[in-house]
Length: 275
Image (tube, rainbow, N blue to C red; front, side, top):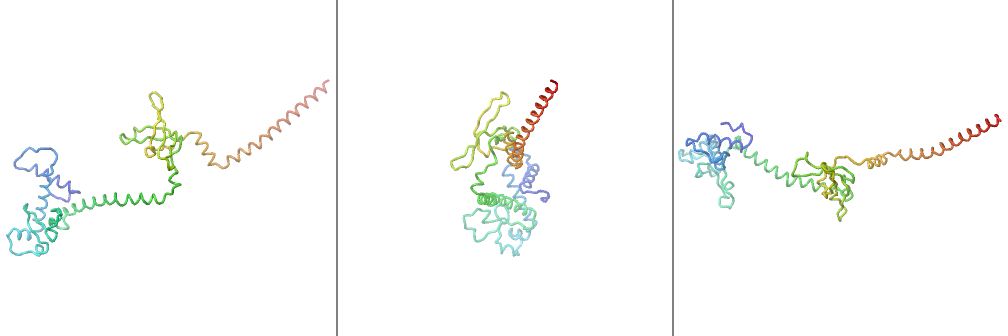
């Protein structure tokens, strides 16, 4: 069995435990379909003993009493065999209250793939822990320091905006659509909640709910009145156009009155000529 074909230690041990269960001579019926913890420990011990037998043959033969020549590694690391036949190291921390795996670690070759799998899992767990405890918290602290109090009070969600009510118990496709009717500021002036209106599609009845801002997802759809006001506010030429139109209206009125007066005088002259 080639351990280089597996990317994690857990996968390697599970496959080994299943093969060991299949090759059991007693052919006992397993207690459960899933691999048990005892089978995983037996698979790990099998791999450790196999790797030690192929990489530390001289050390094992000396510790078993077969060879009388003491290898240098036995003297340096104070190697010994435990009750399961596994080569372990011992040293000055043997009398401490640390767990057995720390006080007496198992001897493994540094460049073996099984050893790399063990350290791969350890580094992955350490990276995930360091990501949560250090990096994410530093991002939150840096963002808090950069945002001022005025910017914190500024909110993207406004009254009349169409939002989706976030619900952790259902998928996103089942979230309800609502309209923000009123923003509810707290005592410190920061808006943390809002009153929204939800319309039932079956009977058309409206329901008013109070929801936190974190549960409102804006859809960038606003009322037509607000959009017109925003477009007028964005376009500086709107007021100028209105002023031009208002200034042209009296000119049009004067022109109309002049035309009517000329027509009236011309009609009177025609009547005099006929008489």
